Every structure is written in structure tokens, then in C-alpha cells.
Length: 522
Image (tube, rainbow, N blue to C red; front, side):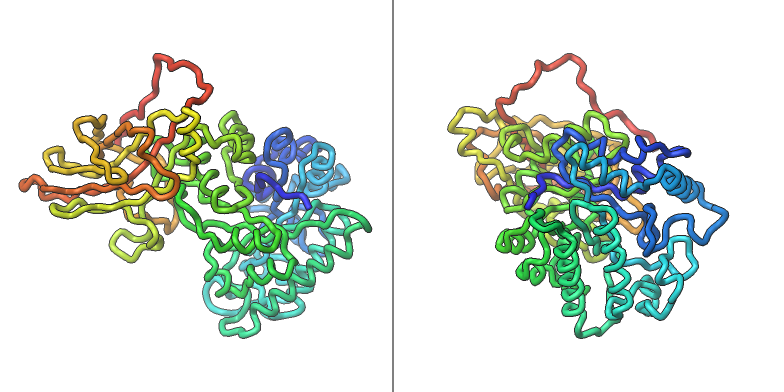
């Protein structure tokens, strides 16, 4: 079975359907495939419209445009027009992409959102709920009042019918079940939840095998689930059981945090997948709290890529990149498919702050930053490096790594000692930069909160380390606070740690014009 190196996700909405100015052409319908051709992303996971209303010409479900004559939403009107134009051309978004994928060697895997919470009669309400309403719903107050109840055979049959139609009428390269658009699939207290859902997955696997031509390659079944094993179990998703039973081929662990870092991820998923002969993929958050960028730079991606490869992940599953793609996006699509080629490319390993309300309990207890600086205390912060530094050193291909420590409200008259893996770093040798009015470029939305300030006064301490000082795996940064200037009563903290791994890369000479972060006004 084909084992993707890099899976690109398009929800078919934000970066395709709503961007198409009517009338849609066949060329524009094929765009999600054309933009991947020739890159390292050999598999496209293509979202099937809104949660339960589709952009393709389904006979089982409800397409955008059915049972509605006028449009209050400009974006929904544009998508409706794309659906109409596709029908006029004798095709639709899904069919055009699958056929184009066959031409250009890109595997197209339709991705079905398994849950939907829209109420009957809403624009994004699907056919079954439109017709049956509360009869097929969980019926519990809150978000899941009108979520589908998978304990009902009628709901499972409806989902299987949607998937059967795709298999028989469209001939995809596989299917994805997306379990991340809902956290509840059964009424509270349903004791048979895991058994029922596992039965549904087994029925789909049987259906896929029945529709595979004799002698043909087994169609892969991919599931997108939560990165945290206990979250899946609480929802009735026995992911490990599915892998052990051989009914799931590719599994994607979606990271639900706000920020991405390069630290190792929970390993239960790649361990279970590899033991079953399947493949595990990591879907990261998109944002970083960094003074230079709101989203990961390619040097950050390389570090994350190496961390994943070291722990047995088959690769990345990613989407929602700035669109249409430019050089930066194509560099990502090229490099991220081949971790073997970036082992000795420059990388930035970095830590991120805790998430959650500033004065409440954190949602990311595994993170240690920010840490207050208090006299007599020693801060101890681990940072992991996945590079095979011993091999690079043996070949003489390492340049001096750069360790950067970021302090918030740092008092330059404090007495601190900084150590890296037990070796004392002379503060007098540090390159120190200070900025009294930094505003991070990242934007948060809705209820997203961080336990670190989004603006303030900062100091950056940069040390060039000996090439022998970094080790593969855990490295320890220590900040030993000997004393604090007594008249400075404000709280200062260690807010960030970054380790810039540098190699004898084939790079161009340094030019004269070097961009710096410009000042920002309030």
C-alpha cells in the first residue's frame, strides 16, 4: 500500500471554493491538485464541503444550493455558484480533483467530517437531520443538542451511504474520516460507544474492500483523531483497537493546542501504528509566539520534522497555508516530504509558553515557560534536539549552535549565572538585544489564551556554543539567580528558549541588507 510522505489538507472551502469568482472553470475546479503537482505532497485530503452539506453533486446527502433560493451570505452564494457551474460543466469539485489527480500523480482522498451540530433547517444542516431532526440527534443541551447520535443505525447507515457513493461513483484513492468536528458521538453514559463505533469502522473497511477491483491495491482508510489518547477514548474512539484489527491504514493525530513547538509529541500513536504496519501522521497547530513570525519558519519546520521522524511518525499532515502558494509554501511542500534531506540543514528548536487563562489552570501542563526569576532559585529547562549531532561532528559539518534566552522585564543589574548542559556560559560573551515595546505578530481568536504576555519589554541573550556542547535528545538550560536588584520589585521571567542548529550548508554569501523587526505603535 502507498505510504504518503506528506499529506496536504484542503477543506475545499477557505482556500478554494469561496475564492472562485463565478463562473467557475474546469481549470479552477482542478486547482487544489494543480498546486501540489511536482511537490513532495503526494496525497491531497480534500474536505467534503461544510460539515454535512457538500460541494459535490451528491444524491445521498444535501449539496449547497438545495432547498434554498436566496442567499444572505456572500461567501455561501459564491460556493453555491461554483456547485452550479460544476454541474453545468458535467462535473463537480470532488470529481474534477480526483480525475486531475490521476493525470498528475496526486492521490486524492475525500475527507468526511463525521459530526455536525447544526439545527434542522439551518443552511449547513444535512439531509438526514433536515428530515428527521431530533430523532437522529444526541439531544443534550449545549453544542451537541443536534449532533448526530451514532448509537442509531439510521445515522451510521447514512454515513456509510455517503461513503459508498464516493467509492462507487468517484473512484477516490482512499477515504478519510475526520472526527475532529465534534467531541461527542453518543449520549452521555452510552456503555457500548466504543463497540458501536468500532463496528461502524469495520463495516466501512468491508465496504472499501468490496469496491476495490480484483487484484487492485487496497484502498487506504485514514482517520483523523485527537493527539491525546484519553480524548479519543472518552468519545468512544478506540483508535488502537482499529489499528490492531487492521481496519485502519493511516491515522492522523491532530494537536489541539494553540501554539506549535518542536518538542517530542505523545508517542502512543506512532507506536500503535507502526506495530500494526500502518502509518501515523502529525497535524500541528499553525501559530507560534515568536517575535519574528506568527507562523512557523522553514527552519522551525525542519526541527519539528526531525523530532517526528526520530519518534517514528510517518510524516506531517498539514494545510491552511497562505494561498495561493508562493515560494515559502512551495519550500515547505518540497522539504517536509523528505526528512532525510534536512538532517544537516539549519534548524530552530524552540519552546512555547503555557496556554490557558493567565490566572487559572493551564491547559498545557507539559510546558514549563514562562518561569519567574527569583533570588536563590535555579530555573531548569529541558529542550530536545533530534539531529544526529555526533555524525555531523564526526564529518566536521557542524557550525557553532546559537542558544537564545528570552527574558521578560529583565533587570540588567540582577546577578545570574547561565549554564547549558552543566557548562557555565559567560554572560559577558552574550550578544544582548533589548526591546522595550515588542508586540508579537501572532493573532489569537475567540477563547484562545496564553499564560504569557502578548507585548512588553524583552531582552534576548544569545550565546554561540561549542559544537561539542549539544547532544541528541534532552539538553538542559539552567538560569541560576544569584541575586536580584533590590529596588526592582517587578516580576521578571524567562519567557523563551531557542536552540539554532547550524551546519556547513550550501548557502549564499551574506548580503549587506539585513531586515530587523520594526517598531510597532499601540
